[in-house]
Length: 195
Image 1: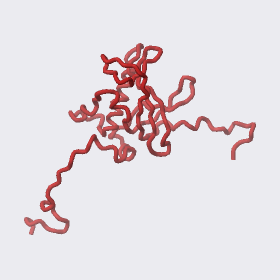
Image 2: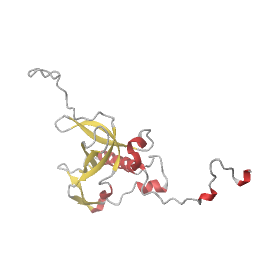
Image 3: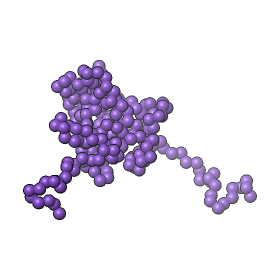
């Protein structure tokens, strides 16, 4: 039962906000900004240059599953700010987390395979990336609440596997080589050496 037409005390605040700390599988779509700087490796028109001279990726994160499926979260991924390195470092940290999450790598994994999985050849490698995001709440330019993606959840997190599901396998699975069936001990059959 909703309140009377002239009493708005029980009207809900912005119910579009996904609660802070929610974990969800998302797909990143980069909205191209048309700004390239080949010296920085920024090609393909993915980056956007803002009016202040900052450069970023305009990220659209679509929730893929769960109660918030199909919801979109818009977050800028910092690449450069004339004010200093903090914004770019935050952006780099987020991208590292996204790659770890998408490719099923622990952040602590320093193996050659893990290091290779954290490299991209271009921003195109990030476009369409699916990973587990930790959803945050920030404010937009008007001071209103809005959801943001500031962190990705890696396999170290206990809920990662359940949220990522079958897609949480690393890169293309290597073809399995199965030993011939005869060498496998059959259940209930004692191997010849044990008879």
